Length: 113
Length: 114
Image (tube, rainbow over all chains, first blue to last red; front, side, top):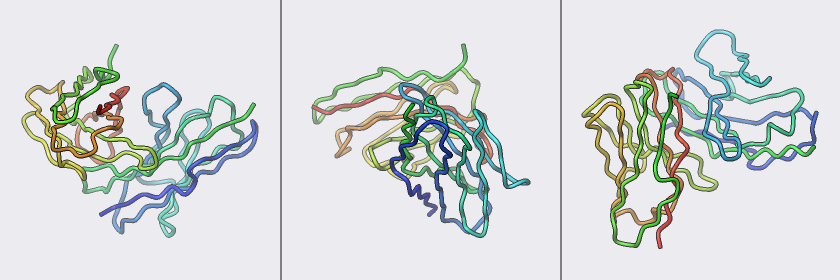
């Protein structure tokens, strides 16, 4: 079975600090990778996704993620966070041939003004 | 205004009762999903449906049941057999079952067992 690990459970940063949230998955085949965000009181929404091609993908609000196949990782980054980035972030993986999404446990990010 | 609606926002249930959570989408999506979100455990898949009149169990289907009689509706019943039903339940949909499709989520229903 696939699994997804997010190593940082709670992250607290000051505004303008750089962000990197870790995501590792366990699956040997071809995968599709996603980062979702849940702002306080809002629905889960897609930040970015990777299927193939350039391993560095850019999403909304200045976020980007890099797929490193050899490390089974898909870390999320942002050069300079804002207070409005305070949210919970979920990494998700879906096998190319599978029907299910597998989500990580989430990382709660708090940005201090 | 297209999207996914879940009702109610909060639901209280007495032990031993079945309760049904509603999920409706007007996105014309074929695939729909139910997840359970618990603190520190992320989202876990309960059931999913790729098309009308078809559904499959996810990782934690025990104590739950679903139906998919209409494309836009995918209700989840939490039965009395579910030993720990208190949780936040999220419904999602995608255009189709293709693994590259984005899932769109509803606002969730918080179920509390009294």
